[in-house]
Length: 495
Length: 107
Image (cartoon, rainbow over all chains, first blue to last red; front, side):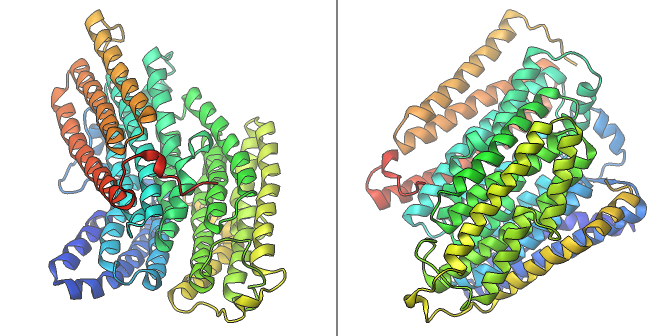
């Protein structure tokens, strides 16, 4: 059974690489026609293997698995203790949940790409595979330097994906993302270097041990923490550092927007925060308080700024900033309950935000515009898009019994319990704003007076329709069985 | 575990590395040319390389840090190539490398 698990864990890195090799070694025509089906196989495969991994974790009740890729190491404990070791991986419940989300969002993105870019199929698949590999690696890292390496792999693949069509807007969005991301990487790496100098190691267990021992902070510890927090906040798009995020989302092609909005920026920034908050800086007050402040600002700013936007994708981007705030709030409030809420809100956010981006792709392909002022009364012609967007928006705003309600509830209860009652109040109040901007979208796009010129608009078919149905079913079913999922995780000692 | 009381030489290395980092960030914020911005990124990464090498020297594990730095250089080159490719495409669209011409996305 252990060997089976090692094969599964190896496949998360090896399978995307294999697909790149196969698709590019074949002649160009065959490669192009095989590219998207191969990508679908990889994403479905990832969903199945992560499901199996979760079951295995639940059965063994161990909580985590350590492993290496490409070479064997027998004594993981000793590696973790010797400060200089690096390049070994660790998988726990958090990694498996986010990797399931990676598989799901990649599948949706490929289904969307089928309609949107026929000639760029091979390029898209190659970059998607690099992206999946980078994000999988990010989900499994156990030291700061590997974290940086996989952050960069994810980042570089997404810069090229945004500018896939080399159009003016795409290049602009991509360049803004690249500059901000390069600045963030330099900060993160400087933070890692200083941390290495003052603590003598970069593995998570080594650094968390030093922080847990309660020794007083040196000035250089503080400098390192500031650099790390600022860098990761830029990557995540938290409020004062969010400048690049709406531009990148708006300018990207539809299928890439699904990826970016659903999973990529969440993995690059928010997952790094979740991982560091859980494994490394759990006792570092400066890390937690500064991120708590940034998260609160993001929640309010994202919700208010979304109200003024006209472009469908831009509204979703500002809504992302707000939802990222909730996830980070849960992660750094310092209670296990909040962390569970953050993990599940991460998954739910991947579901409902990709539904909304698929809706935007559907509208763009049928109505040929994304400006919500120009649309109206489309719910009759596009019943599927209308219904799925209503479900996704209710889940985002946290209306019971949909999935988003439970995770948001857990986060707010946890924040309240840890004594930040003012912040919990702000978070609840911002939910009302979330509902406000989504009701505005609904009224202007799907309901309200029907426009004459849209009489010929038809519902989307194929990949877009399938992904809308699939994601809506996941949102509703997750909402209904949410208590059972929590119970399973808890009785099996996985959280 | 290294000592946290740096001698003047060590302190000067840290301070100069942070100064180069700040120079890079300043150059990134105030230059209006895409190529200059790419150079600014490179300057920042050089500062970070210096810091990493210094940290390895301090903790007595130069071999580990050498592998870090080589990995970092590879990644840095990839980022620079992608940035240069974007700069080239921008030049083909706009006939200029002025960053102020990239102003289509607002709101």
